[in-house]
Image (cartoon, rainbow, N blue to C red):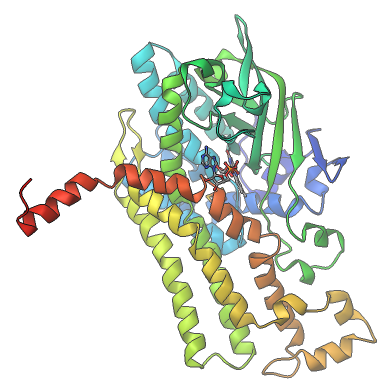
Length: 482
Ligand SMILES: Cc1cc2nc3c(=O)[nH]c(=O)nc-3n(C[C@H](O)[C@H](O)[C@H](O)COP(=O)(O)OP(=O)(O)OC[C@H]3O[C@@H](n4cnc5c(N)ncnc54)[C@H](O)[C@@H]3O)c2cc1C
Ligand code: SF4
């Protein structure tokens, strides 16, 4: 066993020299750690390690699995408070990075699998749960990053995995051997995968008997030569290649998504946590999305930054006292806290699973995520309203640096105070970054689709809304007899 990673700097070192097959804009990336477009996403994960040192109460927890404190992203919840603390940590990291810090998918996958493998073993007499615990222990001991790979490319959405024209549109087992399984397929939109040490593949939807080979859950090292990562583009990402910090808006931190192609990867049995038990695919997806939909309180930390940026620009523009400006900031705060309210309430309402870990309330988590599919868009609109049109028409940092245009821009693009043009430009670029640029991927589109598109939450809310019970309440009070 290697020494555990104890800081953000050590984490970054752990990613060097891995010779991953990463492609970006048609070319193989030599060293992702040194790539200017990729590095900000690595910095965001590194922040999760540093926060654990700065505030261990918030970002670490005592693990009964290995008998000492571990990074909270690797912790299996042992109380309702553990679930609540995940949300508090996520909000704080959103505030510190202004982006997606990528580690929650693995955290939520572990916790979902902990509960589901226990039930699976109870039904089938299998040994998935002890295998998972042993894998978890090694991740905790080494303090690793684990990505959760659920979403398949899916092809024709009206058909299940085994009914597709191309069987490779969902990840599946292509061979079973005495010592393990061989997996082929792909996973789409994978958050932080290039920055992880392991990925855990899981089925993405309810499966039928014919889909048996698709009911696979397995942990794969990111360094496996059978994995190829095709890096997703983000709006304005190549500004990182231009050498200007200001034009990036948030030069230090960004999220990351990639398409992972899985080309005949062998996984030994000790890292297989489901194989063929199709009836447990839906409970796993449900447990994962229950956790993950309230993890989206991460966006309230990012929202705090956006509110701060909008308020600062209003101040620079000399309008901070105007009643409509104050009201718009109140509206942003109201929307932000409404998201947080549902998420943290879901966590407070956690219950113990049969396996012994704790899982949050399902309906409140779906309400939290459903709010996330809408409110950040309204907050982005309000921030752009307060920013003024310059958020979209601002000349580049190179124009500010130019001897010809720089003095003109500094004179004309000032706000309330002489000499504030460059500070104002920085704040506007941050708003641009979060509402149209790189971090709008995380703040807006990920808010919409991550952990399931809006309709997925409406289906869950409808299932759980107890309509008959509500009708009976009304009938009783109205004196309506059937
Ligand atoms: C930034 C980002 C990060 C992500 N990170 C991860 C990650 O780390 N791990 C992971 O596993 N996944 C991740 N996801 C994937 C995410 O869970 C999916 O995007 C989401 O489940 C929607 O799937 P899709 O993108 O294929 O969209 P689609 O499924 O194509 O949905 C598009 C539209 O079609 C509708 N639709 C889809 N299927 C049907 C149907 N059968 N009937 C009727 N309507 C349908 C949807 O409701 C939606 O309106 C991420 C996504 C994003 C955008
Ligand atoms: S979108 Fe939020 S919950 Fe999901 S991994 Fe990123 S920071 Fe975590």
